[in-house]
Amino acid sequence: MAIVIPYHDENVMPLTLGHPLRTPSEDWEKWGIKCDMPKELKRLIELGRKKYQEEWTHGDKGQHEIVAEASRKAFGGENNNQLLRDVVGRVAATHLEIKSLEKRELFYVLDIGAGAGDSFITFLENLPDDFRGGVHAVLLDPSEKSLRTAEEKIKKYGIDGYTIILGTMDEIPKYMQEKLNGRKMDVMLNVASIHHDPDLPNLWKIFYLWTEEGGIFASGDWHPQTWQDPAYVLKMLETNWPEHEKAIKNFKETYHVKTSKLPEDQKDRKACLDIFKFWEAYHEGLVERRGDDGSNSIWPLESHQDYRRYLRDMKKAGYIIEKEGYLGELLNEAGVNNPHQFYPDSTIIMGTFGYKPVKI
Image 1 (cartoon, rainbow, N blue to C red):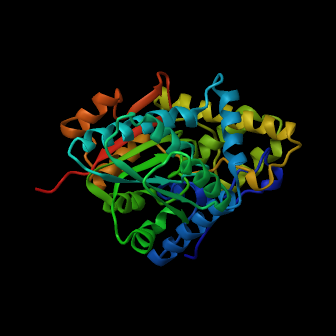
Image 2 (cartoon, rainbow, N blue to C red; image 1 turned 45 degrees about the horizontal axis):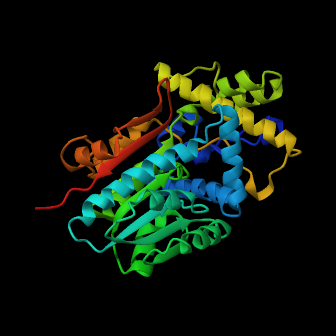
């Protein structure tokens, strides 16, 4: 069997959906994506990553503003990414505050997908005025324009140093060796970024390896399961754009899906309906902007997935995820759960946290 990669006709879709190789690789079989050999799977993952680079490499701070605008329209004025920043920043700052009492002088904090710097700034603003330690910022992003903006922002905060890395998260081992002499991170931050990779189960192994013992991974992300199954995406096409019969017909034929459906869990179903509203709001914005965001365009098909997978893969990599011991102390101090649910009736955005134990 040769490599098989079905791809719908974007020209008949209500908006550009993006390539199915952007969806979680463990769900590719549902999309009809097939290959025989491990090296072929590796090639497909590389292709999926390139599809993300097409979306994010040439964007600027306006790309993040477009996401915020659609979020506010869909969620009653709430900017979901800022909700995520606030909680992730508070957990990270509380962790460093606790560790600074051990007379640690300098902490290295990696922001994965730093964008224009808003997540890192939110973290810095959560540090107490009498914080005893220093912070070295490590900002990783595929967009040079966004990183330049982030650099200018953090310079104003008088931190103890920073490293700017233009690149992608799968290459973290190379960057840590080349730019930081193999230094591991005291904190890894993810705010709505790591879902921009189709091979997350293997990325968690990299994250764990490059987290310092006694360090944490603090994640706040979008978790609709919509892109895990083409039948869920079909529901979105039927729900928001029922007039687009050509799109529905082409989608069904391409991915051999006969009927639409949603997850069984009510909160997970609501998350799918919530992301439908987000993309409807984005579509309305496109119409207002005359249908083209250029290099700041965003596309639906992503590696958003069940938050339980994050916890599963965190634990499998070696992180402690149970709210007990040090992690329990930290999260209680920060007033956060694990997982942390932002909306009582929906898993659309969730916080997940892991602690790398110290070897005795």
